[in-house]
Image 1 (cartoon, helix red, strand yellow):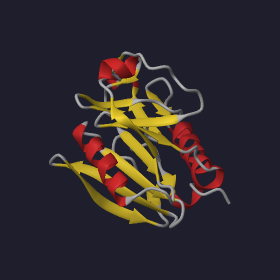
Image 2 (cartoon, helix red, strand yellow):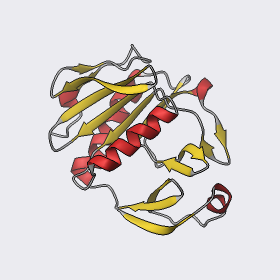
Image 3 (spheres, rainbow, N blue to C red):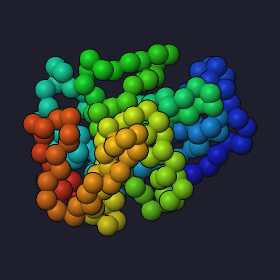
Image 4 (cartoon, rainbow, N blue to C red):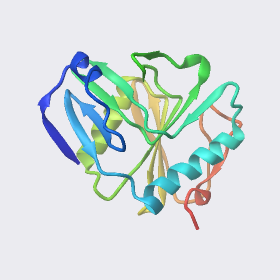
Length: 184
């Protein structure tokens, strides 16, 4: 992941040109450019989860988003994340300046081999800051899903699954078989 060394303000960032086909997050004002997602170990996993969840949730009330979208954590210092997947109740979505300002009811982050422990900890800390009630950290390498839930302001691991079923707390009608996440 490359970092553009200068710190940008929220106002500067809003006026920066969009670079097509580039994934970038801003962390404490530093723009971090991420490599494109790998097909089998990332893109297929995200697409499988979007499809599985989307097929079980009512599109009139729930939005399952797997496109690259900006989730603003804070304006000062500017921090904007790009989760791999966000599941929102439509009535809870808040946007401003074209970016989402409300926590998804479920965030999915798919790890890549290049992710460091520090990066993972930073992302989880940012998800805590916006009070995301549930985060799934998917490891295609280990074929595991770590389920974290917000308890007294902190995301805490409640399960680490290689098999079995995932039950999103805010979407009890949805069930995800862990083995169905991987493209066989």
